Amino acid sequence: MTPEDKEGEWACEEVWSSGKNIFTVDTSDEDDTGWSHAQELFREMAEEYLRNGKYADVIKGAKGVAIGFVDGDLEIIEQ
Image 1 (cartoon, rainbow, N blue to C red):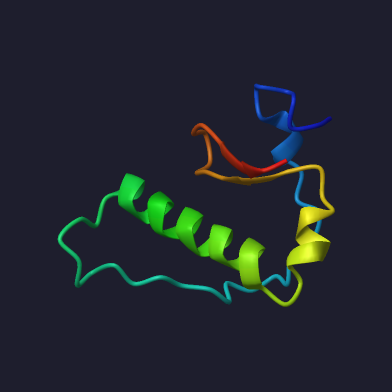
Image 2 (cartoon, rainbow, N blue to C red):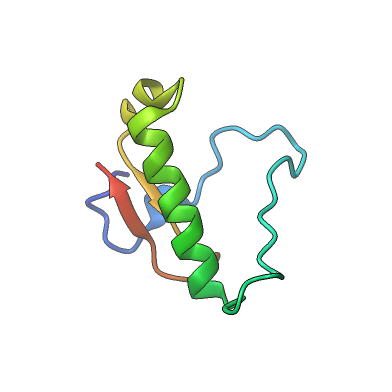
């Protein structure tokens, strides 16, 4: 499956996991603590990493990079 699959099934199979939650973003001190704001923050961080991150080229070699929540729409940020 590829990112062209608009149903998003291509992004449902976990390829790798450390098995630990190693990344947290605390938005409790912000005015907007809703899910859409959190998704926007993650999108911005992912886009920044794709521009300047140490392993950005490895990630860009994937078929696609998307941000989204379980059972929600995916926002493709790299394809």
